[in-house]
Image (cartoon, rainbow, N blue to C red; front, side, top):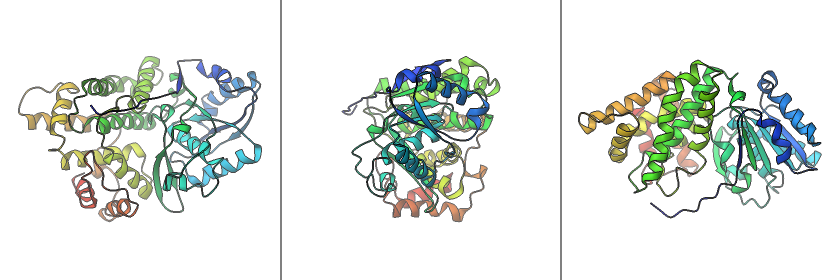
Length: 385
């Protein structure tokens, strides 16, 4: 296990009715940017709960709606301009991971003096951030308990990840009841997103970190166990509660401490989303089979461990166990409505060929836990997928 420093200051308010508590978590006298996506939070009653909590606490707030599923720089800059004009000094993100990601950008951009696209594109130095909190309505990205954000820019066709400790939420509300009205597609996407988050931190090579391995395996096994009920019975509180907590634990930093990580699937997936608009989680399911096909030997030890501990595959040759584990993973993605492999999507060979070029031009290569995935290997991965 490698050296590490782990600090996660996010306060989690978990369970039904916790939205009513947000007024106690926001400093008195704050002027709040209440930011959200579409109209779903009005239809399911979350908007009304948030407004009631802010009013009860006597907090002034300005609403900003319209943050997209892949939050766009252009939209977020409109929110930045609004926050600056209204002198807002606290941000409340209400929605899924995209809304939280977008609000992290807003929190960094409000006080930034310069071209705000430099924040994700050039990892610009950030001296001041605006504090923020979150009310999560879609379990998937883990953004409610980490320092990371992914932003898209329509003008350049880019989708870039970045992070800064100053944009970690001061608090996040996780009320499973807010997920009851989600469409099945979004629930399935969230399950796959969380699952692949864990795989990217786990399926590398042995690092003598048995606790991190077993923490990762517990999240994966729990997702497999609760996914059918979470999909089939939207109002099953316990299934949705466990899904919500799994998605948060998948990317709050804990399972990745001191171990090698491989974010190749995500980096390729981001490019595919930028090029095609396909849902983020679906690009992960599309690309992952190619990654494990091309890097199978480098990941062999962990793939065999994954087969045994997550899928209970202990008989037959090692190669057969690995084959069955990969097949079981792909079947699991399919079971929640997310096609696995590029064949399930309308992605042409010409479009896929742009991915290694874009990654190379942006300085995003090499990838992989050993830094050995170059442009040619990315193309091999896409071909295998």
